[in-house]
Image 1 (cartoon, rainbow, N blue to C red):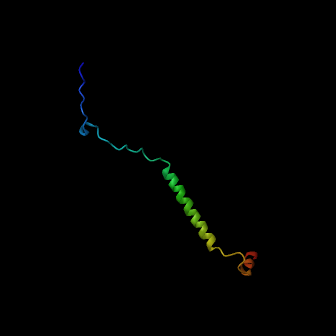
Image 2: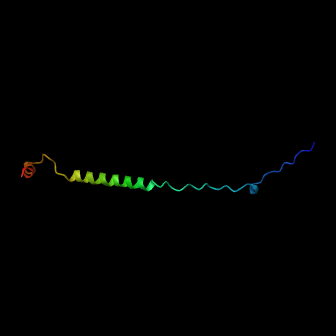
Length: 68
């Protein structure tokens, strides 16, 4: 019986390790980002509007203006 020859594999004989390329970004990602930005902008606008509104029970001047 003959022994098969064992060859040591060297690092230079190994195939190079490559990073897998990521697939293209999801096409709906820009829509998602746009929706989030619009939601934040609308929320900021509504909060600013409410903070600038005068209180209802400050004085009678506001009620007389509303009744006219």
